[in-house]
Amino acid sequence: MTGITIAAAGVLTFLLRWSFIGASDRLALPAAVRRALRFVPAAVLSALIWPAVLVSDGSLHLAPDNLRLIAAVVAAVVAWRTRNVLYTIVAGMGTLWALTAGFGL
Image (cartoon, rainbow, N blue to C red):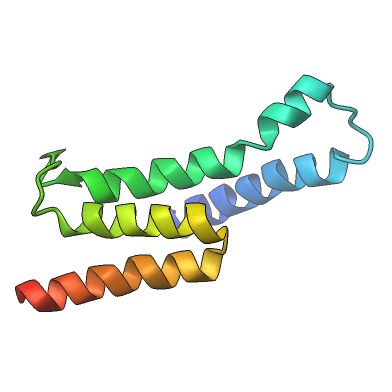
């Protein structure tokens, strides 16, 4: 029964996502909706990243010993200055790894 449920959920998910892709040529979205949809990737990425950076053990962790927060700030500055995704990832992960190694965590 579990296999059937997983397969049904997979098929339903595929059809739901495919319906938007398949209908995109025939569907004329208003300009306001198209402008709003440009911000969806940034909003989703923020929703995924910020809880991992700011929450520790179920509570908000804004202390200076939050190494992920420091690395995120470094990555944000690099992203702002260079507008290069690869540099941002390298700076953020490099900072986190260096801080983690330096603090022996």
